[in-house]
Image (tube, rainbow, N blue to C red; front, top):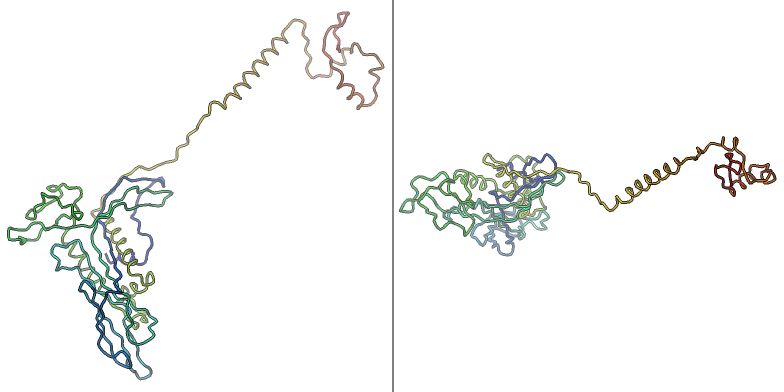
Length: 383
């Protein structure tokens, strides 16, 4: 979970791994356990109780009490040193708890109360802080219309449901006879009417598709981790320290997203949800993969032109063959030998007394001839 929290603070890509061989895939609707976050800006509601001088030299301690009763401390110090005045103050302080006093509230991971101060403090005393209360909790998310388009995963969340983990395995006195390994959680307001707190259920004995099963030991470990992870503090002195091994979390909470703690915890919740969905109990969801298949659309009306050309060409060929096969037809293609072997009838010598090529071409355009028999029965070029 620590790794996922850092991923949420540092990374912008929180997609779960997927396999899509074609680059375009879809999945059916599915449900997953997740982590949700809800932050409230309580700057106007937090009550400050400060002791110590507000001017001059000394140490000022402040306690900021939130409406839910949680409190966070901060200090401002101005003490003279050998060379110069040593001035430092709290930049961020957060206190995390899982509200264990609320019975059976195993869905809540942690309530984080935090105060955030700007670094450009004009005076040495503490200015009013920006105060937030953020709640991390287990929830149930429904994903639909999940798809990979051109290799990019799009995974819209269509429904988010808060969870309730009712007690299970109680004896008649309301006490546990040995803690059960696992108890089911349900969306708020959807605990089955047949649910019996004295029973120790399993997924087999309680086949309810809305139930979420989380090991109690895992819940306890996540609670402890969240308290240790987000109960932190950083000061102006810490910010100047290059050693990040011990105070990286408060530095990041103070720095990332320009101090927008609400956005930071939203990213952390998304990264934790991603880690849950990649855990050892993950279940693969299978969906279809799309491939590109070419389709040819034939507009049959447009085929009429080439069909007509073919039909008319064949008809013209048949007519030409028929006329050419008649008795007495002579072969006269494009050869000029015909004019050498046959005279041109009905033309006087004067008409043919042309010397230049231009005159011949001009006269030739006006003369149309056929190959036939003259009055004497000889084959000639007839006008």
